[in-house]
Length: 347
Image 1 (cartoon, rainbow, N blue to C red):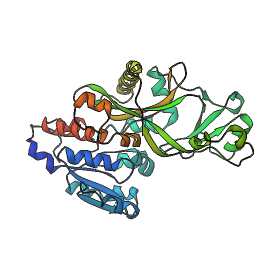
Image 2: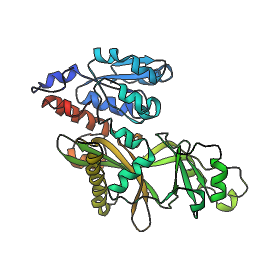
Image 3: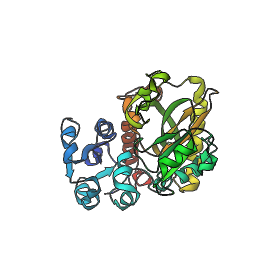
């Protein structure tokens, strides 16, 4: 595949295929790719194949015994002149090293994965960007407040748990490998997930929307009065089952942009020269004093953007036409191909 050089004619877009794993935000990515004139390909397991055959904008389906088998089936993607667009399942199912082994043009900077998938590295990144974060707990002796324990890696909330005090924390982490999790102060506030897109071509940060997650069973616990919860064998869980759109107060938008721009600027120092670009999400809590405390960054498209189909109010402010995050990725790739700059966006 030629990834740079002379300007391309618009009709050449259809000779490229946008491919992604059949999971997470694949429908949004592939629908957006078709809207921008690309051919599309879903990489599926037998369990997920039927879902993607239901949608007319999916041109091809590559069925694998498991997602990690993709590393051995790259010839099929080369024949399709494919560009891979990663999402959270690339991290969860392939891991960092298999992502790096992929030799198909891959949208984004793979070096960012090393910072995204390790919570200690993430914290260094976010703190260096000047973002406020929940207090990190390094030992049981430091616990003087409720805490949340998070396993490393993208898990959709699976494996997170809450501990009320040091005794509960010690009991629940017995047998867990040291360094396999991080512990943070559990802040009380509104959980907010901010969706961004940084355009390397236009050198512009775009705020495309926000969502809140619906998590089981921690969200449903709020329906029970506290006196009715006493004695029930319920352990709060943070597994994400869905997302809901959120309109951010306009007076808060200045801070929203400041957070995103700071993260992008520091990423260029950590992963030079391009740093973080494309879709990403800052995940955090807004406390009653209106401070946004960031607890995590997802350095690619997040499933919460699925609530903004075909667009979001914020994307409409930029484009005045339907523009999901999936389509915004395809628009960036289209513009890069037409201007001979695709090599800047893939590796």
